[in-house]
Image 1: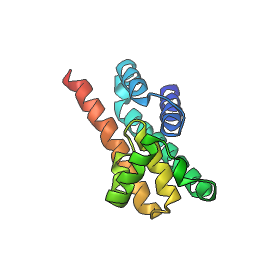
Image 2: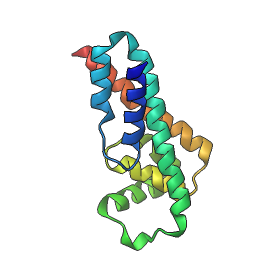
Image 3: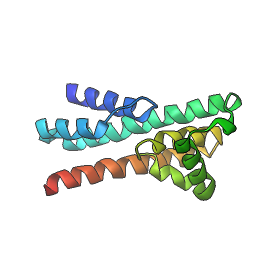
Image 4: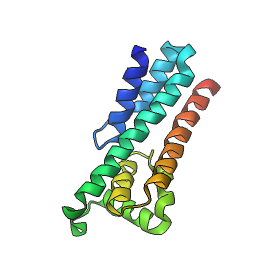
Length: 138
């Protein structure tokens, strides 16, 4: 059970605005506990999704405090993605740097919550699934 808690907490923290590499953790834990690969995949996906939803919630709460004219380059890129693709941009919530910002923007823009959850979950799960498939190929 310990590897699952480690995976959940690592994936959760990596999905917030804190730096972290849950992919490396997943690969290491699957390598040392191959019988838990599916459980680790599910826990990583859920933990990372819940971390992203935390960022989304912070975006909703911070709406009044945010000043769009003071955006960094990565924040402007994320905003352009959301403006162009709308809620579908959340499929990229797994992407380094920009993914966290997409989740915050989804909250700030008050995108529909249920659809946001579904798209974030799909994006996070697809990333971890692809990572595990690549691990098996090599």
